[in-house]
Picture (cartoon, rainbow, N blue to C red):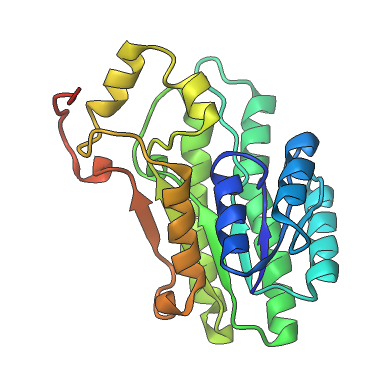
Length: 251
């Protein structure tokens, strides 16, 4: 399997790169963290290639996709994982901040999907495209306005492209994580015991998810086991989407 992953050097993206490489795939991935990208590619060996790119720059996204195609000889699976978050409300979010979140979280996914779909169709590849959505595609946290809006856009991008590309045998799905225990979450959300308890109070399973758990869903969606699944978002959220009240935190 020939796989392309955006923002694959850290967190969920890293876990996805590692899972596909462990499954025997060849993986090309980008990131703005050059040091982490180089280190991961060196760790995983010749079947993995790091190609630096900033997903806020659409020319860079297109160049990354072209370089990935050249190295892989095509593409069977694209994982649009790149995402950023700015913690501001409608009252204090700047236009530049809004635009950057939209560029990285939504427009880059559009551009990469377009490039991958065109290549898959040209090669006759019945491939899979996987978008990283969020529970915030449907739920609202007021102080991450731009993130919420971008993930809502990812949900529609997923459904629309799934229908448009179905005739070519290309499946498009999304993963909607809840709180996943990445370094970013530790630094920006789990900043105190009170903050942790607030998140766990709306998570029925009583724990944060692990990046590897999201990577397993990506592996499934790319596999033949998911051959009749398209246009869907799988929410891996510890039960949060089903909850309409808070629950006691289990210590």
